[in-house]
Image 1 (cartoon, one colour):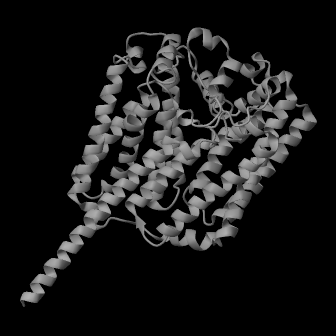
Image 2 (cartoon, one colour; image 1 turned 90 degrees about the vertical axis):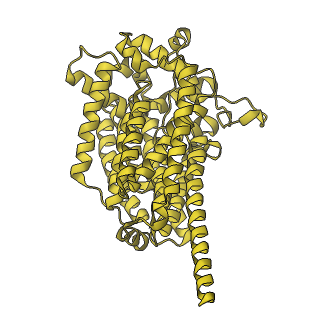
Length: 468
């Protein structure tokens, strides 16, 4: 065992008890848990991508990490576990503070929320909404075409059929994403994020008519393609997870059989992607499963280890990883995830590959301001996600509007990312602001049209009445 039989066994026992107690706290703060709310969805992602890996690293030696010399600093491995264990309690603490301030009654409101079905109203059936979704999708297609033209249609997915090896595919993927010459995130907002929002909307609207079903299928196939075109594994799995989230939300209950099917399909997809995207055709299924296990449980949280080692060598960066749009603030922005990747793998710089090493949000607060602020960030994050849950659950417990539900589901999906990345730049995050604005824009268009029709109908009625 990594930390010795006694300490590693103690870590395992304490971890199991901590998970149990944290779940009880989560349930007490969230209320009736039958679907993944923002807080619940994040908690499970935190457990999978952060906590389990921190426990494993302190108990079972990992060959890849051993080759990198990770086990020479068992003290940092131990503090990695301590930080993630603290998160299990401090995040629910932030949620309880939000409940206390707002006088929120979790069980009362979540029971009301779960009793309400999703409503399709007259205003949802307007042909204008259908046309609007098509117009927005065509804008996405146009931006996608511009992006393909800018990269000369050299997408890694086509490189597979051209017989490129794994190293060349990795370089190509870097060139069209992290190392893209012109503001990749701007293109991604329109060719990836916007169609994903439209997919969420069409998922619920497909019950209206056959034309909505056709639009849903078109959007689904488009989203699948843009998820796999740069041969990254996570986007397709996240899309499948999002569809499962939609299914459970629609039915107000998590179906265990459906959930297990999602896990099974995800596993099959990951195996196929490792075989054909990552150059592991000759590996056995067990070897590939071991790689998947390592990527899911260890791949993200190990960066919390490296960031502590980085701090020892270079010190704290005191807010330099905060966003600095147009250099309006008096500091030079440091992309700490890219810096960390080069710190761990300096050979990537010579190869021209721009990688990144994101990890749970705690790490960014630690490298900026130290341990105490990292612990405070846990409470702050728990408070933020609970405030959002409280707002949407109280609203939707009265009437479960489709587009407001779409906004809520998007936020559930979005905030889950912080199990693997930082929320330091949340106020400037275009991946949050632009998609949310898009949904709100569609809501405003729909409501404005409905009010106008209602006014015209009332005026018509009044005119007819006056004639009588």
